[in-house]
Amino acid sequence: MNQLNRRDFIKGSSAMMTLASFGLFGMDFKDAEGPLKVALIGTGWYGKSDLLRLIQVADVEVVALCDVDKNLLKAAGDLVAQRQKSKKVPELFGDYRELLKKHKCDLVLIGSPDHWHALQAIEALKSGAHVYLQKPISVDVIEGEAILAAARKYNRKCQIGTQRKSTPHLIEAKKQIIDTGKLGKISHAEVCCYFHMRANGNPAVEPVPDFFDYEMWTGPAPMRPYDGLPHIRWWRTFMEYGNGITGDMCVHMLDTVRWMLKLGWPTQITSTGGIYVQKEGKSNIADTQTAIFEFPELQVVWQHRTWGNAPDPEYPWSFKIYGENGMLAGSTMQADYFPYDAKEEKIHFDCVFEREQYPEDLTEDRIELNAAPATRLHMKNWLEAIDKDTLPVADVEEGHISTASCILANISMELGGRPLRYDPKTMTVLNDPEATAKLRRPYRGPWLHPEPNKV
Image (cartoon, rainbow, N blue to C red; front, side, top):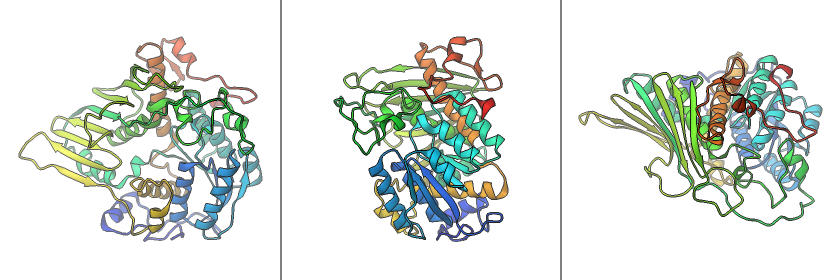
């Protein structure tokens, strides 16, 4: 299953049709001799998941792994040795700079927390590697501009982990409903998340364990008193390291709507919200937020609540695109077309799982079985873009627009809900020096904030 140009890496008629639409058959890396050399920076849950999907669909050798948690790192090394063809344990590093200095990698995957994305992605691009970067691409807007500048300067392909664009049932829904004009004029979309996913405890401050480099984990972010391992969900509950539920979950669905409707930058972004209900813990991210992303004759409205019920239990994390003739709802699990004409039939799109093709998925810890096929397609699309010197479906520029839009929503919320108009040419918020000052977060020394003209 590991040959890059193998035609049958996904079997089944619907999946094959999806692959054909991507043009993924018969591809080979130019002048490649042997497996592609790969490294992963950040060996937590989703970093490993991304890497294992790549191993399933490409001829690669994972030569190095990097993490600041020695226990997590060793476990990842053992797991990769079990899963990759050579059965070798990759070389293990605690500092990504040492990894990039020692290994000349073809591909680098980055699955570290959001506050590390910019520095690590830029260094990987400068090293000559093509990069697969998890979303959101940055924690501030200028970081995103710098990553984009680096990808273009060094002519590397940077695929962002917004894999809804590679989700088979959503590709088919776009093709049948959006691309055919079935909805008629579209002037409104809703994106939402109602998952109760906001960690909100009050753990005590404690000594940092010997196996964990908290100084390096914190890096350019403000250093909080250590109150337990930040892995999995804990770090995401603090604005020091990310952008809350909007930065984590809205970026996926906003990006999907933008892809389906071919939207660029919003002309204006407005947001309100805050901590309205879950006040008892340390968390400082909003538990309730609404944002309006305005495009010409079209609004995309975001809503999240980490408490209470989802208005539509079938679509608790989703998008809904409204046209004059009907509505298309979509999520990672399904999609549905609801016509306004009662005489017209509804159309349902099922999720593709590929359990039979990849039985190892069934025993993988914490795997999202519904997302695995999309990530595999995403990896294949990335490799095809490298091979053909084209932009991948989730190119860094698209990931930057979706990420920055969510960051701007948070800035609007912080500034009392005033509308913001970002100009990517000047990299400023028009007529708003206070908002413009928030496009760069202060970095903790000795780390230096990347600048687009100095990458």
